[in-house]
Image (cartoon, rainbow, N blue to C red; front, top):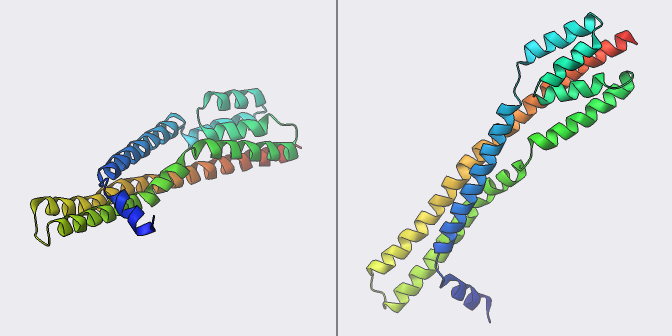
Length: 206
């Protein structure tokens, strides 16, 4: 079977399934966005207060108090700092914090690649629906011997709507992805800053 005949046969199924695919993609994108929002909000902490409390405890020589304050915090920044304080010596602390930072990054960026994929490909899925709709419209026009019918106009309308729906799915997905990437970058930068404060203290003590 020739490729054009195969695609023509494929287009005969219509573009309805494309809309359902876009609906499914939008649901997945929304689920990922909600999950990441919950993760970010659940791990928030006032970093200025946390840093002040930890460094004050370390200056007073209260290592266990500093560790206890970090354990109380739900933030990823605290987990990184705690990994450093739990190590023996500055070199080991640096390695442990680097490892904790990578683990935190993986957790914070969970499923973001899927969100980016949906944002990048949803317009093309919509465009596929448009192509299928246009092919169907030409088939209808051929069957009607060039006469414009109501069904023909319906085919054209469906074709145009498919691209619009694809864009409507993609735009929020891309916006969420960019926002989450900025948030993750900021959280990791704060973790790195707190980690360097811990390292400075350990090196001074050493």
